[in-house]
Image 1 (spheres, rainbow over the protein chains, first blue to last red):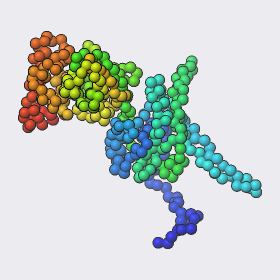
Image 2 (image 1 turned 90 degrees about the horizontal axis):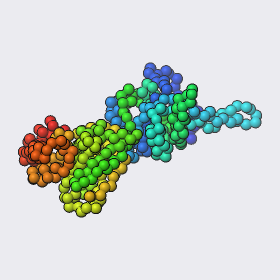
Image 3 (image 1 turned 135 degrees about the vertical axis):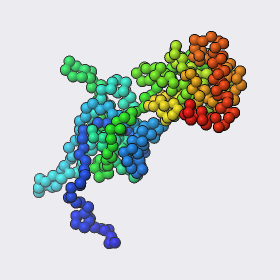
Image 4 (image 1 turned 30 degrees about the horizontal axis):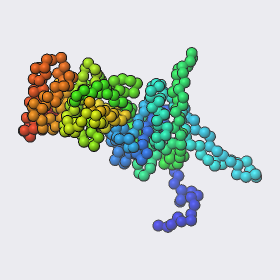
Length: 318
Length: 73
């Protein structure tokens, strides 16, 4: 094969352009959802082999530990393209022809109407270093290729605007903007995946906070408070009564045996603590309490999908 | 770790079958959420029946699999 070393692409045999109309093509529709991805998270060739494979992979990644997680959001209420015009310059002082010197990197503004609590959560995404997949109304997912994986576009700015109160004529607004970083990601290396409405059924994770209600003898009563203040114990009493839903450890990391029971009076999970890690401890010794990882909570036998503890709670043996 | 859900209480089977019936009952009696509203005698009876379900699981390996698949998993 002849080398093309030293030969520029001036069309002809070195060109790649053709003008045939594909038998099947895709027209972009209005944006409908966003999927944030932790840095380095992508979809392999096997995970994009079919819609079912993609949906399964996305569902799994949405419950993965932080750092390896996907964050689906199908809550968009308004969308506008805020991409700037490309920059052009004249070629010289002998003509007025203008050529492009800088592409405009795409940017979008969005609004949601989920509410204050959700909007506050979005602030945490501002400096999270996420990449973003775009999902349109026809459930086509747009992203870019990196290291042979389908992944999100990198961003130069994820800006969450201040919420705006309702007026006599306008509803309240919760704005945020997404400005991408690389034009190459969005043009030459852009890729799409045609998914289905099933993708919109994948929700994000709700963070919950553990609160001690009472600790007497070997019985620790715990409330589990979701964002917005709802005690989710009353919603998931059976699920949280699985022993594998709870992790209690002593200061050395040794596991305490837990028998959780739903307390309908205090609407808490009443954890009976046993095992040598607990019985051998003295009054005043410190223990940590936490829920199992989100992936464990989501799976059988617990089946409490879409929740994650915001962190361990430290309690002292009475 | 397999859990036995017995009347809205989750028992860690592996850990519980290491206990004697007396230890099992005495460990769980202070938890007033277990068998709430019953008198002490009935609560002890309840816990003994829970232990009776857990204990054979530790002794008969073949039955463990059956019960785990049908009732627990």
